[in-house]
Image (tube, rainbow, N blue to C red; front, side, top):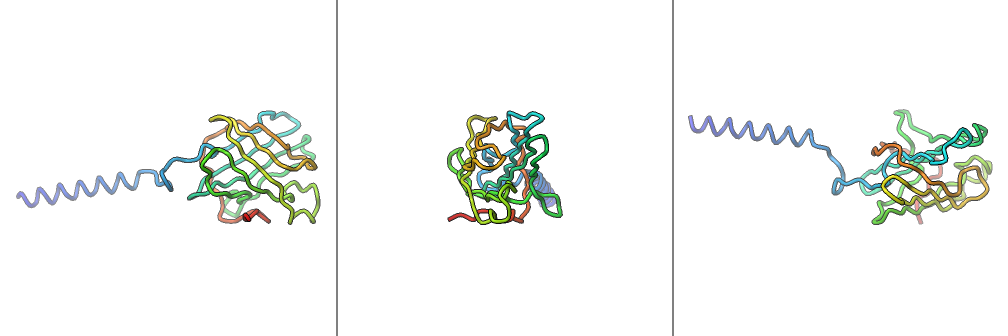
Length: 173
């Protein structure tokens, strides 16, 4: 009787442990996402310009993609996605210690320069100013993308990105 009771108690304990493990969220690292993760919207969002940044975290990396509609639709560039509807990776960097990400982005995303711009890269910075405000800086003054934009957090969600990369994504130095 005592053995049966201990066996049942052990199985119940094992079952509860397994159930709590399965239902708990499984995140990489320490489980705390970067404050840059989320969907960001251009503060100066009017009928002339709309600009968005999506940021997700995977393992030890932050992944970004950008998109926008400019000049009332004369220039449109929305992010590309794979067959499953997940955004392609446009910028991927190792998760920073601080709230500033510096990388490079392909000049060809603007579709302003033509086909010869796919091998040129410009500096890009994503800088968190507060919990809900991020500054985007693009070192490119020729295209229709804003060279500096204040972005407001629209939704805090870990955007799930495709394993595929955007055409000519910067691979680092």
